Image (cartoon, rainbow, N blue to C red; front, top):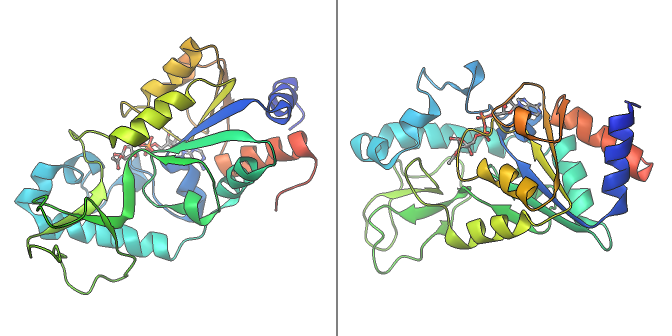
Length: 254
Ligand code: OAD
């Protein structure tokens, strides 16, 4: 990959300044975690939109929990890939001003050692009380695979527990959204592995552009964002990011 646009982008990454990377499910694809849309996104023929709602949960908590338990088991057996590792390296570089804003709930960025991570959609590894009972904390960690009781219960009120992820129709955690919006004030904004269909996350790309950032997409497919970015790079995150890293900093990160 020695095309001028890659060289120029690598130079911009090397130059430093505020860099924000918005990531989506495509970043975890090489770890074996299925994306949400497209054929591999279907779980027993249910699209994510039909399972990731409070209504679906209330109608059939066992079914929705089965989907989340399947995803928790899959992610527990998965490892961060080269894309997660490069982004973690960038975030840890001395004098780095790099923020990773992720829509992913798998925590593979966390396991790769990313610092300054904004998790917009929560985490598969945290639970919350469905009834938001007064005695339970807003969320609590639970890393057990498999969960001993299905569907799991709130340890405080005995009602149903839910995954502490953002479902369709729900608001994003206010602090995470504020941090993500703040991160759109940057010099360089990369959108990696997202279909850019789900808002407000997808809107961050346009916001960054309005703030004067140079916006780049990295995705093997054309997306809703492709037409609106300054540079659309066609390729897989786990391939393109290590190439950019090598061009920018010289040493392969693997
Ligand atoms: P999607 O499943 O909508 O899109 C995944 C994107 O990744 C697509 O554009 C693919 O082309 C791209 N892709 C696939 N393999 C890739 C690879 N190896 N490298 C780079 N890109 C690749 O996932 P998101 O955009 O993340 O919400 O979806 C947004 C939200 O919708 C998710 O956070 C989730 C879902 O419902 C919640 O869980 C709240």
